[in-house]
Image 1 (cartoon, helix red, strand yellow):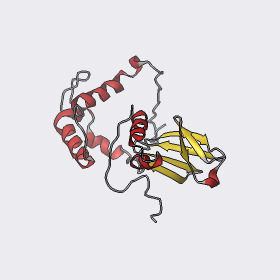
Image 2 (image 1 turned 180 degrees about the vertical axis):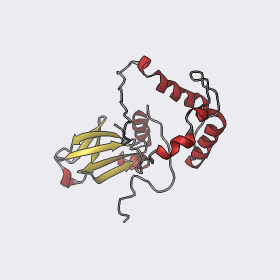
Image 3 (image 1 turned 90 degrees about the horizontal axis):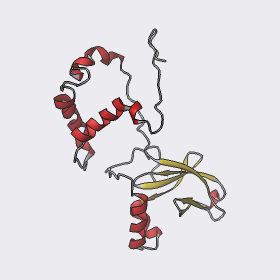
Image 4 (image 1 turned 60 degrees about the vertical axis):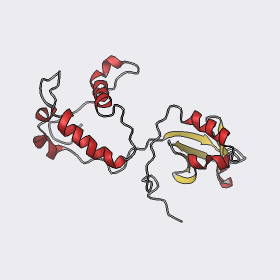
Length: 193
């Protein structure tokens, strides 16, 4: 329920594998993929926001929609709606694949048949693994206890670049890797040594 008196909203969840139930959402995603992102290889995230803003202002929000026969900019009455919009969340969305594992007595955890070491004091403990496109982070009770960046993997595998490439190829097979330069937002609360 919304926090304004007299306004209510209901969330209807679509069934799994029922594309006919989510056509409006899927067609909007398809429109962005085919028109804005088509063939775009993002090499610098500094250009994403201004490019998206320009695309919205010059193409997406001024086209006449087939369903309403109106321009989105006219349909949403942005000047009227803007005061009612809430700010975006301050925390960025976490894109990690998260899994819970138990460290072995040899202080190892397993992810996709690969074993990784954790500090010895965590042997037998429940560990949270967060697998990102560029690294694997291991947590014990929300405390980061170990992480492995992909660029450090050759040294983990005895500097065997062939084995490392094969493993990374398997891990990254269905992933899109985005390299962001600069300090990591996820690690902002960690103390620098």
